Length: 280
Image 1: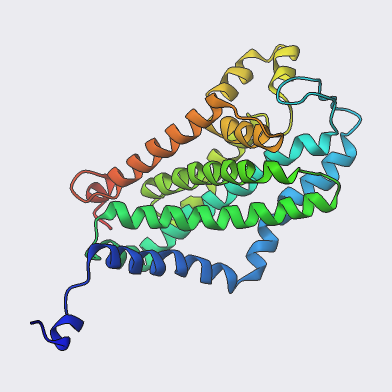
Image 2: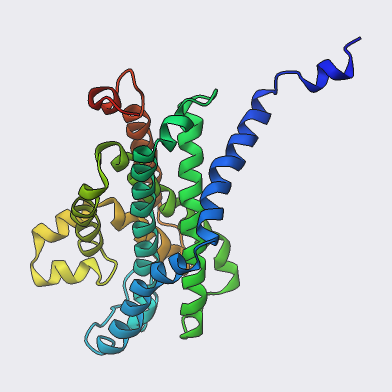
């Protein structure tokens, strides 16, 4: 019979290892965020500014026709909400990328990746942490939008939260992938601007794609159709009215998997760019 002392010193099982790593990685990111309330304010200033100013200024300029998923005319501020939710997730995904670059320069990533767990698990926990932070910020923005008169039926909330979580996961995975190739903090701003603004503006976040087609901007329309951010916004937009858009969900889930696999490949010292650059 095994003594109590031996049982206490026994090697933890894999599920216990994973639970401890999950708590350490996700808990660290959440605690860091909660200790800095200004981060929430700075994350919401940009979409709130767009929401308040643009919805007031362009409400009578942009007419949203009765096209799917809408069955009636809507106010412009209601149209903007899915795009601005996507903006919150997009910027937080890039913020997560900055956090990874910073941790790598400070040596935290080297310690994390030498933990006795597969790198896939550790990167997945990083991805989960970024997703949780995005959904938290998106939920706060949704509450503020509700105060400005954007109503969402309670029956649609579960599907909307799921769409928000999936869109946030895709954008967090994109940030995780980019963190492999952004080697220094001073190069971060230029790289992120090259990613964030084209993804946001070449999408239906602020104006419907049919308006691009109507105006003859075919090449912009085609770029928007190849933009994964477009489908994250559309998945949220359909979910807000209680509908399911299969193509958007397929693209979001597929891109999430591809971005994560590329990040996993990049952080593999035997095959990825980490080996080529000589750092962890």
